[in-house]
Image (tube, rainbow, N blue to C red; front, top):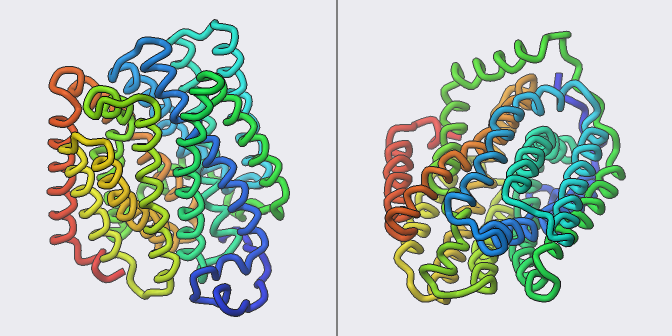
Length: 417
């Protein structure tokens, strides 16, 4: 049986009426959860800028070093996300998320201290990447399920879109803050800011109403995980949805890890250019999130997910050919529009079409798909070191385009949902 959701909110009026662009704001818990997510996202993007510059500049690393950091974090995600999905249905979700967010804040604070005292070494970055990935693996399914807990099925797509819209706004702000802090304070400033944002996120999360664990049979953890995987395999529609989450995660997303390489080696810029590139995707994603929020009451989500994924791959392919910073920023902004639409629709379909008893495990699979990105990033990093970022990224995006196109043509299920 599914975990109970919050009591029905007032019907709302104007933009918050059911089916309207801000319908999810009728729900008090969603408003609190959104604020928590915004704080988390600011910290995450500040950390992304700080980690990239720490490894590439402060520690004299290279593209392979960046790939190893992402790989270690992703390995934790891949291995522990099913555990997070299992725990999300067995223990009170709000309390778990507060603990995990506090642990992430402690990791960020530790990095800031090590950098401040000049004690940081590359192997320490690797260790903290493992720890951070483990915490993220446990927290990820819970944060996604809390969106459903806060609004229920009727407003879920709108809530996912608004959550994505807010996160992408922070994607614009966060990199700019990170680059500014590095310039004014040093790399440690980025991790100090991340720790402060995570503490705020934990405080806001505690203000949510408790989410009682789902009533389940006393099934062992490994048995429950296996049952969730078996459900996805036998349900063709859900299998295609999960596969569509895998294509960008494995073939497209790894390019983000190497934006510092594009900024420095291809576009002849510095940390400011790096921040602009990272922010560009978020800027475009704001428009994409707005599109999904406005159209969230449409009956079929599958076609929009497929086409937006196709155009996302095409935009990143075009980015690989850019040699002027302002053109590269513009193309990544367009890519951000399609990425935001694709991601919101894919996440909504995962929750809306999953059987309630398997929703936690399906959400853990989404976290696992994120964990596959760094493994691909390591391979991409090695290839970039040998053949250069533009050629490698262009080749990978071509593969992603073809995979998406074949799935679009062959999958009748996605044209019907």
